[in-house]
Image (cartoon, rainbow, N blue to C red; front, side):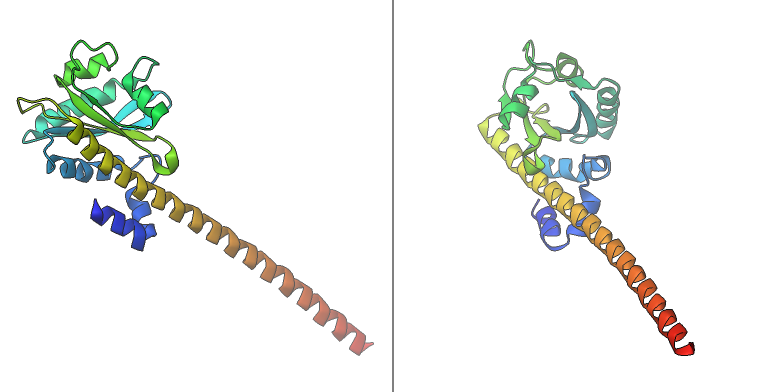
Length: 212
């Protein structure tokens, strides 16, 4: 994560290539993010982007089982989660905060299709929020361990999601600055053209007067 923030600070253009809104290229870079989470004790992690009121999976990681990750990612993409008012992720969007869901099975406020397909008993979730606007989520769990998630897991995931949101924010800023710079260059070019035309007209006028 520190490397990502450093890229955002010292090379915003490169950061833009890593984290352009709205998570459109997270499918490319998301694996690196998820591997980072794996090194911090999680067994599985999934990265979603928000599209309207749906969660669309972009990357999935399962410790030691890439085939399972591919299968779960395919399922998640075929069945995007609808964020109704009852779903906990909707509360996270409203409250701009992470959650630790310690009892997922049978919980009426989780996305039942995902809980059943993932066979997860508990998980942590954190929104990704560049400039305070939720554009996606990170979910992670301890499926391969005989324990549930706790507050430490929640806070760890939240810290990472905040850092990634900062990278995205810097990338957005770089994009806006580049767009403004390009527009300014076009304006200057048009100004130069107008001035050149004016000077040419003046030269022709003076030449005509001299000849007369």
